[in-house]
Length: 299
Ligand SMILES: Nc1ncnc2c1ncn2[C@@H]1O[C@H](COP(=O)(O)OP(=O)(O)OP(=O)(O)O)[C@@H](O)[C@H]1O
Image (tube, rainbow, N blue to C red; front, side):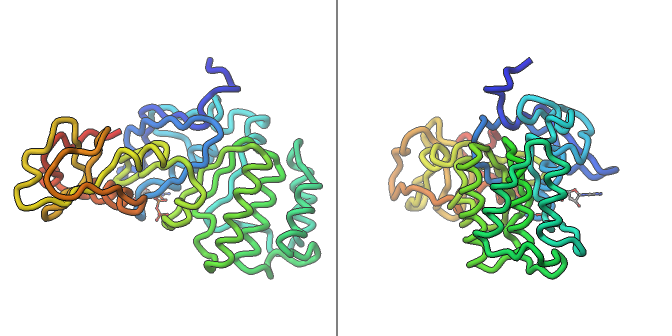
């Protein structure tokens, strides 16, 4: 049994989920240490929601295993209380007021923090008497975030939390999210198509595409180990040993290497966006087009 204090917040081994004949996740191996803020990115249909729903115990794996905070997802009421989930459409009860939602939260959650909930509702300017059905998308997202956080979970899981929000509301939401993570000392996983948001708040990145993990790790570490090479014709052929091509395009390559490769031409650092797009397009590329060097090893 792993020690719960030091158990990874998410550990998947051979995790596979099929819906009928469609494979949404295929043999996923992934381990994220406790306390990280994880950005989960990937194209539509990559399997992000499926992974998050498995993590919350809303779905069962077809095969393989998944442990959240050291236990099977939703293994017990006590374990459920350790995880807060905000679904993609931030569902609320339309005829319940904001205050009703907090009352319901306090009844259902043994570790409910009413002081935190009320303070946050006031901070984001929500009227406790307002019916939730009349809240804007941004206000609904703030209410859902407050309810998830007032459980005082050790892990907050968000499925595209800010997708429906305007840029200002999104920024406010992300600031709140980070304040909660700091105040609770919690980890978080958030899926998003908005790479700027991921860059702003996440210290760990997981790129999922084509039902598989394309790359995963600490953002800082990943950025330090990827380079863009712009070379004269033939300058990248052959590439030095130990350089893995992620994406090759007309004399320009995005590569993974432990140190700046010694090649003719320019060797530049990459942005998070370049890195994510390169791994996403690698998943789409036919094997023969992936590139030269030591390409192909997925982590
Ligand atoms: N209930 C379901 N029944 C059948 N297929 C499903 C079901 N849910 C998801 N899928 C399929 O599984 C794959 C992964 O879907 P999932 O919703 O996990 O992707 P996603 O990365 O969250 O996508 P998006 O970014 O569009 O929200 C898709 O091909 C989708 O069509």
